[in-house]
Amino acid sequence: MDTTPHIAPAIAAIELSTREADRYCDEYHAPQEDSDFANFNHYVERAFTELLVLLDRLNLTAIYQRVMAEFETAQKDGFAKTIHFEDMIFSKWTDRIRLFTDAVAASYGLAKTGQVAVNDLKKVLKRAAYAICNTDIFACVPRNEADVHDRREAILKCHYPDLKR
Image 1: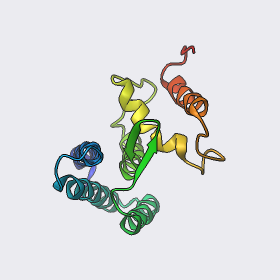
Image 2: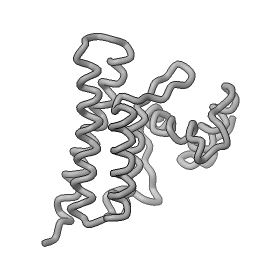
Image 3: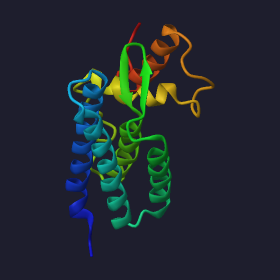
């Protein structure tokens, strides 16, 4: 059975769940209601589950195992785990989910490769939060504001090659 036609709606559902998780992440850290924390957890777990189902359906066992390991860590550490730097707060897990979701979308031709359209600069910076703080990529977390700006600039240059400081 060809599962290809179902990939785009599945990815759209995952993206919706991650957007909702991010929304509740913002509200959880600027408390509005007690339910914000529960909703934040719910949407992160939901996005993980949707991604795992998609990967299983596509029989992508290697990436499925990687996502399952991330899911198990999220269960242990808490789905509401966040990354803090400067005056911004980001969900650790939605950034990880997007990493895998974007890879699947690109591999099935559902993402614009070679012609990246960036409509919202804030979205790019928000998605980069995990990467610039990841000690698997950099020797340490940013030590100061200059480190944060250097790392952000490196990411932005991928989208805007003529970027000048």
